[in-house]
Image (cartoon, rainbow, N blue to C red; front, side, top):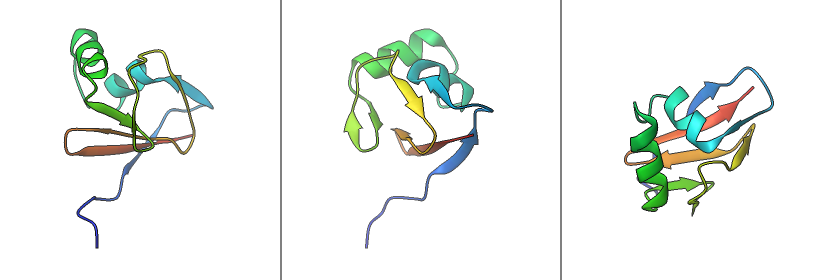
Length: 75
């Protein structure tokens, strides 16, 4: 059994969004500077893999994790 919690669904109202935008939209971090730092430092994963690209295009179903939070992109 795993300690991971189920991701929280966050509706973006469309088909795609960039990683940095989504982290702020989902409330994972408040400022763009904090988002940039967390991503560059490798503290953010997308679908279980570290991704250091703030501009990575996320699609519906992608799961973003930061600290103890997991959020899934929903339409």
